Length: 253
Image 1: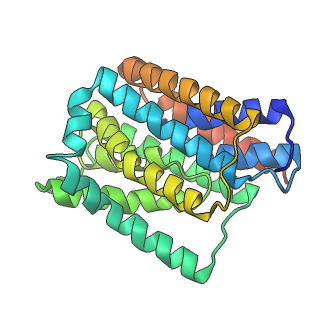
Image 2: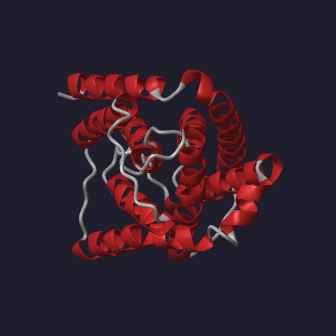
């Protein structure tokens, strides 16, 4: 396994943990970091697998300690809804894999970051524009369609889901809760798909650092995000994503 500087490992872990569950793109940020380090080998499958596993454990721990009802609902009343939400992503993922499509570029991340931010902004500002379906199954399916946008680097998975649920006339807290529930199988599938491709499971200090820092940063971010979202709203994330997109377009033009 290639040796990476500890600064890369530290930054990689922090960014993965902080950005996984908030309405900014974790994959987009990790791609930016890799480009800044100018290392074509930095996308290490074992590192990605460890980070996803750690993020998943952070989510389970958060739900267990702070919102156990949501964790119970995931395996009971909301299970069918979460499965329904996965259908578009599974179909899109299979389509992309068959055609071997690759959307990765910093310009793509810049544009999708801005577009995703504008979508969230419009839903926040124009509250009269709402879709009421009277069907939770249809709501989660529509949110699953929005979630497919995250196949484009820079489009936030959580941001797309939250945007969908706000558009579907869900309260802010419910939109976040639904987004977290939908993230569980997606992260699990990502972890399992990466783990399946690994021929050898080896432990080293880098993996331990990634696991610990990702877990702590993801858990603390969830605590902060849920606790203060009613106070700060989504506008800071909108502004950040627009600024990030503009900086990328200027810096990498």
